[in-house]
Image 1: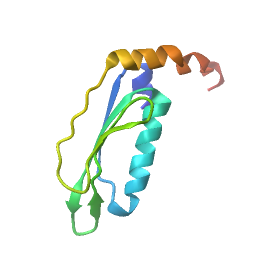
Image 2: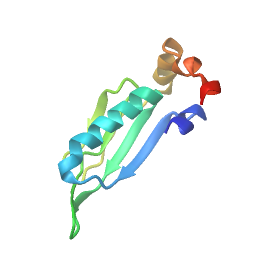
Image 3: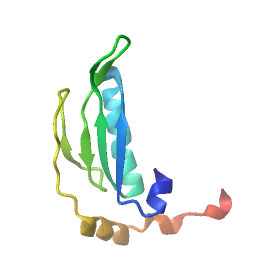
Image 4: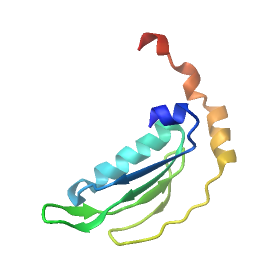
Length: 106
């Protein structure tokens, strides 16, 4: 995700099949990815079950501050949210996280 953000991505799209017992991990990791990459995250997680797993749903849209803009439950749902590239650019200007990188060290 960082590579995409460094290349100018403004929205990160994630599709997944996270099992129901780990739904909270799914949510927490996505919140962190939005914050650390200063991007919107639009993530879709499978619902239902197969012979080996039950899936947790909770598809979600998160802003670059890590705030949840819309979230589904464990049912099939269409999510909507207004995404502002101006707000994204303002956040990136106010907190220029990519300027502190030391790529010479890795």
